[in-house]
Image 1 (cartoon, rainbow, N blue to C red):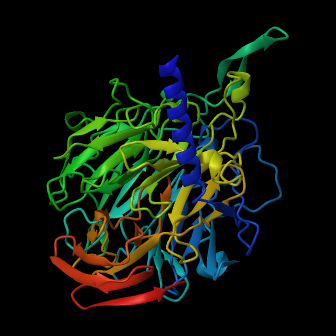
Image 2: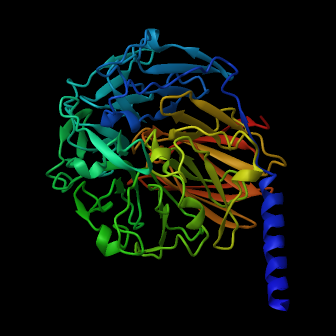
Length: 563
C-alpha cells in the first residue's frame, strides 16, 4: 500500500512538472490571417489510386532575399474521374511581415504535375535559393533568376527522374563547394496499373466481408533512389557509381548529416516496410551502406518498420547526431541514440517515446528546441493513409492530432500535446511539416501541409520566453549556404552543437538558420564554426536574443535584436 501511494505521488509530481513546463509552450493557428490559403487536393475520385494518400510537403525559404521566409506548396493534379472545377497547381506565397501574397504566376513556379515534395538549395552559389520539386512523374528543377522569377532548367542541368519522387535533400558530398542532390523514390506504380485492393471489415454487415481501400505497399516493388553529383553547376547521375543505386527499396524520408563526426555528410534514408539505409561517406562522394553494422536498419526488435519522416539532432548534448524516424500506426516511432563513434541503439522505450507513438500514423517530424531551454524536443505530424480506416479498425482515425514531446533534460521525453493549446490538438491528415522562425522572434514556428486539406501555420507564442541566439552563415570557400557546417556554442550552462541543414522531416525543406536556446544564460562565451572542408572560425562574447550573419573569413554582424 505504501509503495502504491509513493508511486502515485511520484506520477502526480511528474505530471505536475510536465504540465507546468508545457504551459511555456503555446501555438496559435495563424492560417486564416494574412492570406495564407493553400488547400491541398489529392486529385482522387474514389478509385483509390495509390499515390493519393502520400503527399504533400512544404519548402520554407527566402526566395527574394528580403529577410522574410516565404512558402512553397507542392500540389497534386487531377486523376481519372476527378470532376472538380478547380485548377490544381503548386503555389508560392511571398511573406511580407506575415502578409502572404500568392506570387505563383509572376514567379513562374506553378507546376501542374502531380507534385509530392520539394527541396531548397543554392546549387550555383550565386546567393539566391533554387528549388527542386519531386513529382509522381518527372521532377522539376527551378533556377532562381534573382529577380523574383524562376526558370525550369531541369533538362539543362541533366536531371531525369521519372519515378515517384518523394523527399529530396541538397548537401555537399565531397566538400568541393557545390551542393549535390539526393532524391528518394518510392514504388513502381502507374495509374494505368492500379490494383483493386480490399481489406476485411472489422464488423461485417449485409453479407459483405471486405471493402475497397488503398493497397498495402507490399503490393508494389521499390525503386532505386537518385544521387546527382554537382560538377561546376551541372548535375551528373552518379547513383550507381556512388554506391546508392544498387538498392531498390521504398524510399520516403531522407536527411544528410555527419553521423560519424568525420567532417563529411552521410545519408540516412527512411524506407516504407523495408530496412532503412545509412550511407557512410568516404569524403569523396562514395558511400558504403552501413545501417545493419551501425544499428539503424531495423528497430530494437530486429524488425523493419514503415518509415516515413526522419530527422537528425543531438538530443543528449554529447556532440553526436542521433536519428529519429516516424512510422506506421501499430509501430512506435524510433529514436536511435548515437553511442559514438557512430554506433546506435534503439532507445525509444527507454526514454518515453514508445507508448505515445504506437497509435498515430506519423509523417513529418523535427528535433527542435521548441521552448528554447537548450534541449531538443520533438514534433510529429500525424494522419492515417487510409481514409476509411474505421471500417477495418475502430481504434484508428483518418484525421489525427499532431504531437509534441518535451525533452526533460534527464534522458526522458514527455508527451505534452494536451497542455500546449487546442490548435495542436486539431485533427487533420498531416504530412509535411516545416520548421522556421517565421516571425523572426527566435523561436520555431510550424507550417503543416495536410493531405486533401488546408495548410496550417502555427506561430509559437510560448511565455515566458527564454534567451536564444540565431546564426545565418554565408559560405565563401564552401557552398554558399554553408550546408554541413558544424556550430558549437559555449555558455554558463554548457556546450551545444548544431549543424546547418535545411533537410529532414518529410517532403520538406526547413529554415536554414540555426537557433540555439540558451535558457537564462546572458552571454554566449564563445562560438566555433567548422566550415565544411574549409577551416574553423571562433567568435567570442556574443549577446543573446538576436541573429548574427557570418560571412566566411570576413565578418560577423548582428542583424536583429529584441524583435
